Length: 417
Image (cartoon, rainbow, N blue to C red):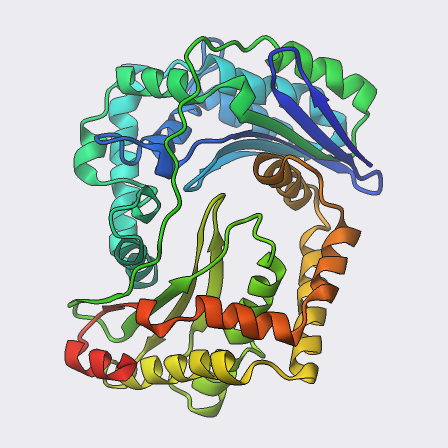
């Protein structure tokens, strides 16, 4: 059962009880991410997420780790381009100490200067790790190419130079600017008693105040065409292709999800079957949608032998054209819709994924979307809608291509011409 509460300080609490489970997940979602960083702040959202775990006024970093392990639970966080999330997942019998630990971490972290300097080295290693992973690196390079100078095109991790220049004062100022109760959602899913949980959350987080005005400098991005080749001595050529996507609340979002599933979202997709199964040109090939509050992008990734890179790009372009010109048959569409419904239902069977859905619904739509409503929206997807949507989104003049490896730029240019 879904419930929504608003605490006196404006902080929203959304809950969904799942009595069949023995676990509960509590998440704190702040509506700020890498796209909200100003000049000289690149990577600050992610770095700050790390720093919340480095000691509070009453607990050291070691004590935080020992307490969550003693509960047999999970305490973690992650940063996206639009949100920063802190969550704890435990057995329902441990919800009180879990909320106490999570709220202490969120409210009383010290951001000690010594810990800031130490954590810089950890984040710099994380950046180096991406540089050593071709699949991650080509997707970062591609996002930067496709989004040009838009904040959504930045790396969430930031760059080494910016990270090295961070100081404790930068973190405190960023929290004051962005961590407002009105921009924060607490999401709880799993096994819990709301009558006991509500006052617990109110006591732990309901007194947060913020005097600075809320800053919002977001504007929609555009996916720009182009071709970039980064030479690197690798056994494979790693490829990313991008096209416009849709925003999270777009009226045709389920149609866009279906187009992604058809194109490269599963092992029965057109790209997987054509490029891997029929021709053996790639081990890994897939597509995915990145949807944001006001825009989005569809990305296709493939890895192949350098001499086959142009052929793979050509085949991908051909499948995109086929969707634009011939549309989707009834049998293929029905199979895709059944796949989407199955994936959706299976993905929401645990408390952590249900907690994430609750928070995203509230942050991006300001309302709860039931599973039944989502399944109905999938059922409404039809071939006429997909043909129209593919013609709107799959404009090859706006296709962006990024290649990493020993690849000929001219051959790739010819493949998309």
